[in-house]
Image (cartoon, rainbow, N blue to C red; front, side, top):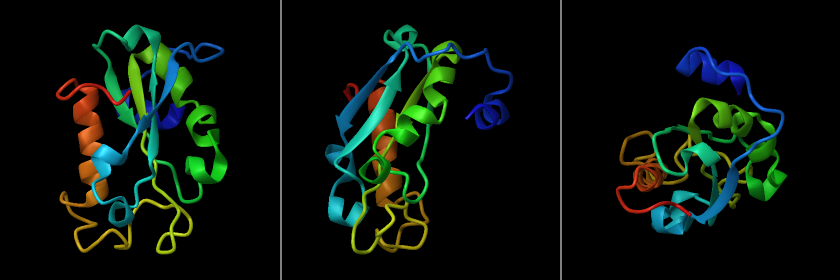
Length: 146
């Protein structure tokens, strides 16, 4: 997480020894539309540092890899990658959207081959629309995911 965020954001403040914010599990279904088509799980997670509760923080979207969704590994990806610890000291809210395991997606991967439909590689892709909606909500354009 540190190498990735440093590459994207530049130098980072050192993380605390333990996260000081809050993990919020939220309902992804309003963002996913037809869930069976979108491949989105029922729930996602957002990590909100205490200092970001009143706004003024950037958002980082942390997409899990195949077989790394909460359905498969519990909260290991969400809580053990280091994103939350770095978020506390670097004014970041971290969104952890979740893809779901299904017969067309047995590893719970994000759609890179078309299981969500023909638009999977475009800005009209169901998963892109879902995550965009989550970001809009976090930005306060329609409330917050929690």
